[in-house]
Amino acid sequence: MSNNADTIAALRIESPPTTLREIALERMRRAIIGGLFEPGVRLVERTLCEQLGVSRSVIREVIRHLEAEGLVEMLAKQGPIVAKLDWNDARQIYEIRAALESTAVADCARVAGPDVKKQLRKAMVELERTSGQNSPLGVLDATTEFYKIVFEAGGHNIAWEIVSRLNSRISRLRVMTLATSNRMASGPSQIREIFAAIDANDPDVAAAACRAHVGAAAAIARTILV
Figure 1 (cartoon, helix red, strand yellow):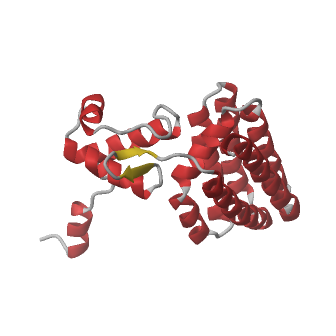
Figure 2 (tube, helix red, strand yellow):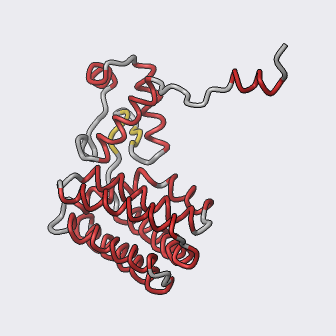
C-alpha cells in the first residue's frame, strides 16, 4: 500500500483547469481595459450572455468581480455600467504608484544580480517589441511583468500585493495614456531608463527615473480627465 506522501502526490492538482467564469472574467476585464466598452456604457446581462456564450449566472459572477476591481459600477435603477474614469481617483493611484514603485526599483537596483537582470532584459525586449507593433495590451502585459520582477527581486512582496489589487485600474489608465501622442514610444523609453539604472546597480538613479516615468503618465492623464 502506498504511503501518505505518495497518496498526496497522486491527488495534487498542479495546474488546475481554467473555468468558464475565469475565461469570461479575463475577456471582460481586457475588453474594458482596452476600451472596447467605453466608460458609462451599460452592461446588459442578456447581451453579454450572447456575446460570450455563457449563462447569466456566470455573467453575474463576472460583473461582481469587476465591480470589486473598480472596473464596473452598480447604479440604482440602471444596473451595472463601465466605471467612469475620475481624475481624483487617478491622482491617488499615481501617488501610490510613485511611492511604491520608486522604492521597489531602488531596492531592486541594490540587490539585482545576473539572473534578475536577465529576466528584466527579457521583459524589456517584449516591451519594445509590443510597442513597435503598436499593441497597447501587449505593452501592458510586458510592463506588468517588468514591475512584478522588480518588486519580487527587491523583496517588496506585500507592496506588490497592493499594486496587484489596483492593477485593473492601473492598466486602464496605462492604456488610456498609451493612446495619446508619442506615449507608445516615450513610456517604454522611460522604463528603459529604469532598467539601465537597475542594470548599473544605481538605486538613486533608478528611483528618480521611476518617479519621472510615473509623473509623466500622471500629467498626461490629468489633461485627459480634468
